[in-house]
Image (cartoon, rainbow, N blue to C red):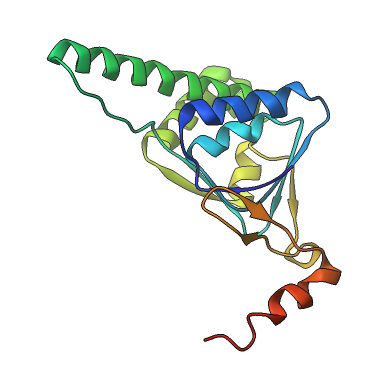
Length: 171
């Protein structure tokens, strides 16, 4: 699975996360920016990341309407979801055997700190943290070309010139 995504809805991220996790030996290749809810897909069996790609983690953002009690309930629910995401990311790091000092609790504190601060990670930082298994050097890939807000397509090396030829004479 090749992924470049600005993220989106938490629930959609959970659906894609479940699909990737449940289908066994899935290799997820991060190509560009993988942010927000899209980071939930890092639970794939194997995650590779292009050297020029980046990952962004941050707290869930949302809103609601209703009485003050309704707003408080929504806020409490979002806090629970935030905690769940941090736990999932910590479990992921544990799975890749990169716990801070061998401690799940210390690792969770570190990830929560990054998560609370809205942190952008380079490929090397994501690897060092345990979010990815391998960095793909820039000489080994062709960058993805975004075709919409939420989807990407990749061009095989033999197709690159044909794809970009149509753009050559455009300003």
